[in-house]
Image 1 (cartoon, helix red, strand yellow):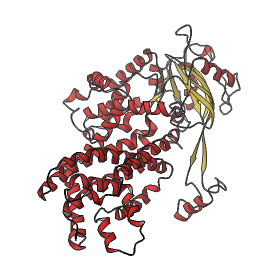
Image 2: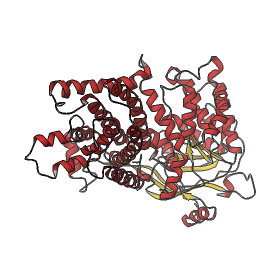
Image 3: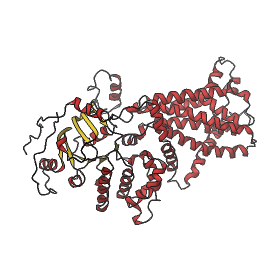
Image 4: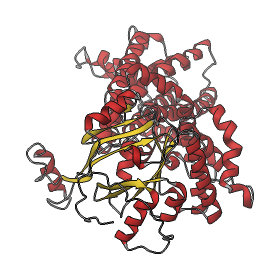
Length: 305
Length: 284
């Protein structure tokens, strides 16, 4: 056995076209290629149980080391609302002129938190789970969708707390509460879409994750989470006429106001922008479909390099 | 390449074909200011001008590797540390891009790496479900295999541990559960990266038996290991990578003998069998 250690002797390797022909002959496919869009959707659908199990697992593991355990799922949003009430309701006096201010505020905070944490989680969906992406094969869109689903489950806990708050503050139960369901479906679609867009950005440039909290905080303050856009506009007569419609048509404000309209008796449909359901559906479709396709376009690049 | 492997069936069906594969890593943030903020800024501004000046280094991890793997084969990948074994496996799994060449596969090769999907704060039981689903099994399949997985892992041999969070497991127990979950699925092509290094002797025996079983289910198994004994026990063909190049490709014993002579490892070498000189695969 004589071999030169550093230079292997050139012996006959099969010619390159031979190997390609052999692969073609046996119907082998190229490893790591991006599937077509219908195939991608089919694969994603096949993984629906994983998406659900993964989001529930993330949710439950979140507080598994805390003594109070899953009670924090409800405590967290309540404490959040209490802080905002202290600052905006008591100290800054934003509540003037807004009927049912506490339900108004708490609904706003919960619905906003849903969008905010979905987008934040989406930004880190790929870059924060590289181990998973590099180890297993699954349509990567499962990750941002799964994180949004986790936030939706979180929101459902918050909604239980919200119902208690509503009843405590004397908001009557009404048939319009059913409207919360389509509103949530639309908001979820919107969140998932934006998450997928941000997931692709975040996968390429992880630095985006450092920037997002500031972008989101700005977005929160212009979306009327703690105050009524309408009341604010009434105070500022010098605002150009396009400001209020633009503020009200921003997706976060649309979903927040829809939920307020559904749940709070004193929040009238006159406070909603015109064609509000159309706007809500439009945002959901635009973000949902656009985000999905945008995410799929880079499917084969995630977790590489 | 037909003379390399013993014929199992008359017509051999290829499952993985690597065709002149080159893999190059690009590493950000090397050299040029040692990762300081100004260096990073500089790098972003001059990105297009010169990758080298911007501190991007290229690592040529795998160089022009070609091989054909057939159904029913168990192939060992050996080589000293940093010779590109794991990189090649990742590329076969489709998780790393190839610079040149192509890798053709039959079905989806899976890396035995379910670890990443598991969560330490969850019980072993929920992790079995989560891991199974992550690998693409259906809920029914996981339910069906659940008992088998738990029994195989031997987690419950010392009490009811499967209902405890995984963070309470010893590292050996966790590794056993991970291997059991990953091996529960019948993969077309299974890629194993040093998975057998963990676990006690009894578990290692069971794992090797399971690998042989997976092979029988018409699959192809790739095994990366530094343990020559486990390669001998499970593989019938070995690829030897050195510095990213394919040094040898042939029957286990022939390649291992050469490899052991190369590394100076005589510890677990069996009596040499007289055998024809192995064919040395071309590497460059």
